[in-house]
Image 1 (cartoon, one colour):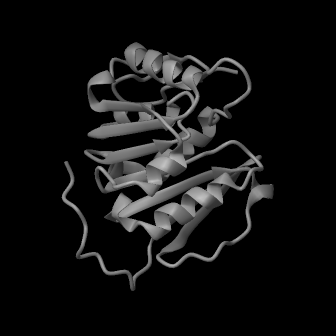
Image 2 (tube, rainbow, N blue to C red):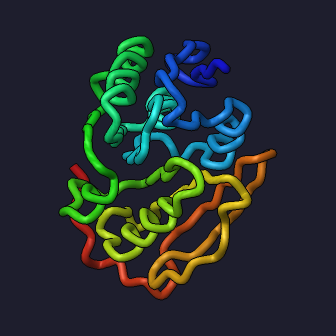
Length: 196
């Protein structure tokens, strides 16, 4: 399997894969579909790539004009791969790479309100639910018009009760399901921290 940057300043660059089988990189056709849905909203946005793996999603966002991407992964091999891929694509300056547990990060104080939060954890461990509930419980992570995107196998999906987020859209591509969440209309938005 190979993955590449599809569009933008780093278009066509091949990305390195994380050694071993601890990650599940997003397929290029799914990534292309994802960014077609996001469209121009990616411009000047701030992106949080949780369980980042190769960093492919955050790197694609930067290549297409995102202002900043923060990559979180707890695996040393993934962190090294993300840093190498950022160097390959010359996107290091707008990136922050942090080794850490995604749940520990989400339980802490948000460093910014993110426009896009991408959740693509290892399969079949209910981790996507835990991460989504963590964002739902602490909406300071999400900008007023922000979107949370979950990438899972369709067999993993079941609706989960949320207090503040609602499903906007679902798209299935083979054995990959993308679910888009945004703030519910009733959710007050007056207490957001300023973006850095």
